[in-house]
Image (cartoon, rainbow, N blue to C red; front, side):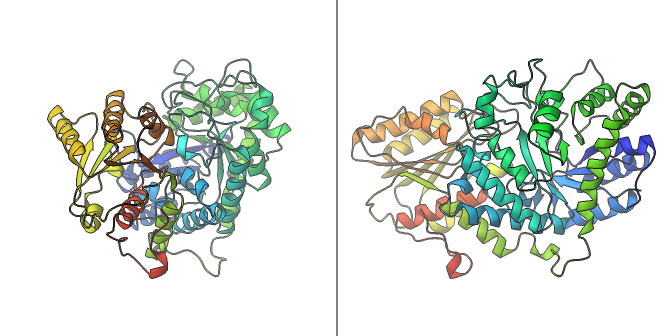
Length: 542
């Protein structure tokens, strides 16, 4: 690769822009090609962040954009749950907490990393913004929750080491996020600036441990948190803008020599409209950020960086140091291409073997808090009523009709979310009262710009349904939690302990978790698991 030499070319290399978008209005990556190509002709940025792609079309889009760019593009994406998280048709795993709970967690995480790496590279992606190494340290964290592997710093550190080693072995660059730890927050940095007000010693003992181990394991990049830590920087600046946190702590004390990546600059936790995009970017690079993600005005950011260097507000040494770290990241990304004996292929993306592995991981990661015990044979689901409670509706969290139709066709399903009218809620309550077996499903995952857990009215409704069942001491009930376990705790805590309330947690509402739940339920009710794939791939863990 020909190294850029001019100040402007080098400044542009410090930027990664979106290809596609998951914020309104949602834009498929392939539909965004012409806009990005036009921008590259005017401002050859360092890389692209993929959102909402489709396999196999994404590879063609990226190849054409690589051909358009005068300097090879580093391509990255948020792939915590596999390539399928951002690319339709690829494999999508459950949230990290499900893998962390699996009895064979090391194998599950290694499989996630290997499959993500091969599929991502086949699609033209070099860098995964994963793993999340935040520790789950606050039960009502609205944005991390089950994205974290565990609440134990040591276990999270072990999971991070496994992921980084397996992904790097397959040629995928990795990213430990969100430094110095987003697991304690009770607000969302997409929507404001959270503050973690605990001592520096406590942060070093818990939050920072997985980052230290990730660095020792050879993680390529570290992503900053748009969160303030007064004990680490008394100015109140978010970590992304803090030299004491990024330079003194991350570089000098912890010895990280790789590339420091900002979280998205579109998030409210880092916005500073008064400073302007160029001045803000220069301040972040001065604080220790090397690679700027999601700048809203790329040309203005490049102008601002050049002006800051020429005026002396940003030292040439710090500027060129940032460029060198980004450039070395690109060298690593492109050095292995064409030299492999077994390069990943597009045909592997979303293949049956990968999907079955994700399904098995989802099933093995389930935690049975109280089992159903001896159950009558419900055959095809006669007398079984499922009521699914959702915080909202998205294409990834739609009901389970198709799965139920295959294995429990006589079961009755009701889906309740904030927009469901009163008459449908009443119908669900009547069905729950009359059911031989009631299954209440709490589906509440972390999501940007969303509050924690279920809305209060739906939480109350779920608890009352279960309470009536438990109080009767004659009717069976199951609480299934597909998402944050704390959302299930809040429902379960309002149900008396006088009767039998079974519970199972899947830590995720991804499609594989829903399928693993329905298969296990059908097996326990006498209908047997859904037959898919080879005999050894059948799911029967819960």
